[in-house]
Image (cartoon, rainbow, N blue to C red):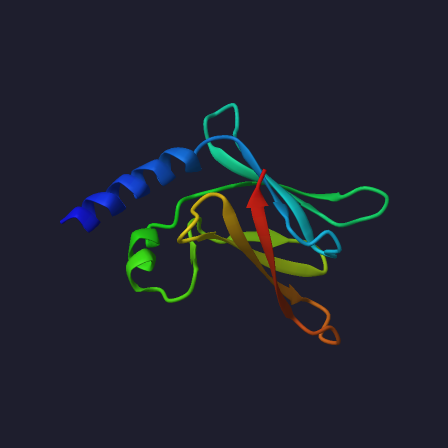
Length: 140
């Protein structure tokens, strides 16, 4: 009973933290992919994320995307093995040459402090191989 009460208190705290403004940055300074993600509420009150990736001379802005909590989050906590579970529904980013699916995962033992962001890139050019990359990020 104490364990269930503890989990409920932790989860309530996580949900309250999840809907505030914050930034996460990659822990790998030499990344060639996503460098930073800014989470915020827009003027209408929708929760959004703005994604930045490595470019030169400054990072590229991939855009701002609406976030929706994954309804299966509580089930993932119980059943999914491994330290990370998806918290938001995947984001689809369509460009002329690639469609990317971005999944934001939170660390079970350190929620909303540590994240793993998975990016699946589906290239339209048949000569280019699709790829999956992940980025370990932490809250600033």
